[in-house]
Picture 1 (tube, rainbow, N blue to C red):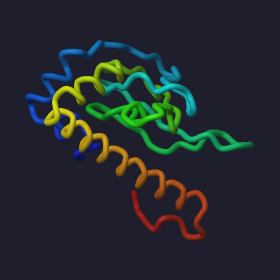
Picture 2 (picture 1 turned 60 degrees about the vertical axis):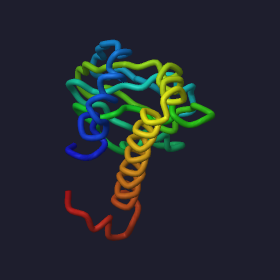
Picture 3 (picture 1 turned 180 degrees about the vertical axis):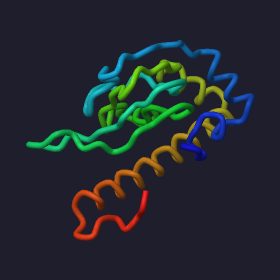
Picture 4 (picture 1 turned 60 degrees about the horizontal axis):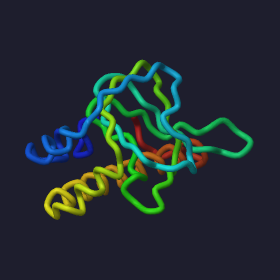
Length: 152
């Protein structure tokens, strides 16, 4: 994905550097669930390598794949909005290396520095908008009589 939602595109260098000071490197094997819909959202990740899939629980069916995310992408946005509960699930589709952040610390940093907080809020807002658009397209492909009309 090459959009304004990747870390390098979304945040100015000084804000990226500030955020990266609190990063912790983590790895996930393929098939590892990062989080489940409805559970507490207390972390966020930036993918370094590999692919993470986002999915939605569908009663009586397999979870619906919403989107696949790769290097530079933010995993999770629910940590930014009270009540801090995941709205989707996420799973490593391949081996993944990522930067992990404690959501409480990031929220505190945002509250203490208005400029940093605004930059993070705009970034997260763009991510939410992009993910909602992706979910809409996916649902149209699944349920609309002629699909979304978008060629991917």
